[in-house]
Amino acid sequence: GGTAAALNVFLSGSLSFGLGWHFGWNITMGHLLGMSTSGIPMSAKLVSVVPHPQKAHLHGGRFGPEQSPLAPLAYIFGCILLVKIYGVKGIDVW
Image (cartoon, rainbow, N blue to C red; front, side, top):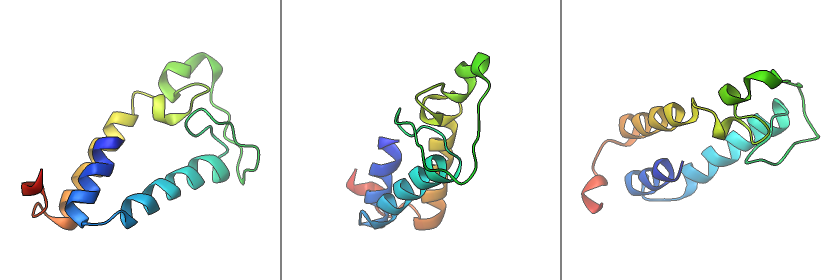
């Protein structure tokens, strides 16, 4: 997640998109789907998603989807989207 956030700042030149992305993720996972975000359980939710307890190794368990094995794939996908949206002009700063 930190790499995607840093890449976002370098490519876009601001924190705005990264903050919006993070806020959107937390609102979607926590308040819309009722899943834990960064280990913090959410009580106010629009839809209640109850993950299978015996498959915690797949969905991140009590910590939430950020701890699942799919999280790195989501971050890589996010980095690819950032390069598609902004190009690579800001990478030379790295």
